[in-house]
Figure 1 (spheres, one colour):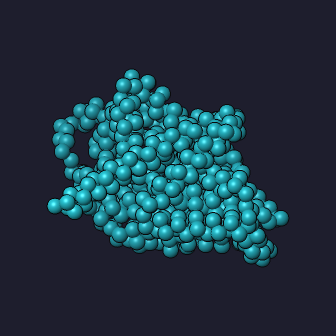
Figure 2: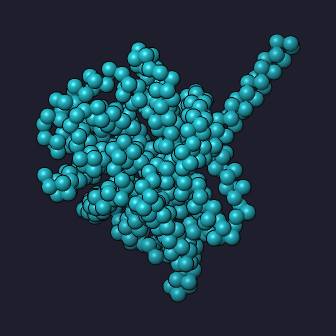
Length: 477
């Protein structure tokens, strides 16, 4: 009995240790963005050093919890970074700078989910659901409504938008209608990648190229509108799509059109649109007037805006509940992103302090000797293809820009930023490993290969030349 008792005690002790480690990791993830923002705004070097130490601890604790390719890549990138830094004889300061390189991206990733938390307390989602059920019945209406909602909400609430759309619009009705809704939402969400400040693609690329968001916005937004129209055209001419029942199955049985109209709370819908607009306009104005980085502004807005929102709703008392949901549900999800962002930042920093990066520069010299427009097209296509086979754009873009920064020929930063985002967006459309395709695949009970490559190959094939046609017009090539 003693060995069995000892085994039970060991198991209980292991569970207790795991629980303690889990709470330490989650608590540090909650504190990290706050430390980063305070240290950045007040330019406190000592506090930034503390933030870097916290980031290193979070990385160490997140590595064992990372899964799949993120875990493998994380270990490989960190090992490679350590070898390069040790071989180069880098000082401790260089190690710290490597850990700190992508703290802003980690902070953005950890705080954006908090922005959508107050949605459930303002009756916004039920109002949008009512509007959809009552007013949206024909196929083109279903497609346009889902695409526009995804485009508008995705710009503010990021990937949480897909979960919201699924919960609101896909609980009833036929399988075909559900596929149409999620396809349209996929198109709308993809269009946000080119301009929304809450998207990590925009944050990373702006951070690395030094382009201000307001400079990129008109070009990115124009590209977004073009691919929205492209998605609509492809859906309309798709003869394989069957016609669906005109009225969506629902538990609600309304008697007449006047009652239907009255039961839609349009005030709440306009209020939600206004809130989203205020989030974006606040971010834009602060970025334009004060030159504050988007990667600093978005976490700031994501933390502060829900507080203002709840005060406006007179529901500040639910804040502890919201924070508990955020702490228990959202924060523990992001091990993979923490490991990827931090490890690639460390590698990028290691390359800049070593002779290894010179080999990449030599290869880049040959590449840029050709026409820059064609070269950037090839690079964006390569980013997408590598993403499809499992290599994150975070890695390819970081390594490319790090090499380019060591090269004497400098491209137009705006042209470079847009080209990199184009490659990222194309990859997200097609890549089975992209979070968007994984989520939609779960909702539709399909593999991410079906959602990404099978469903979107035509869309991606047409999207690429159309976008680069616009780029030729923008930059007069």
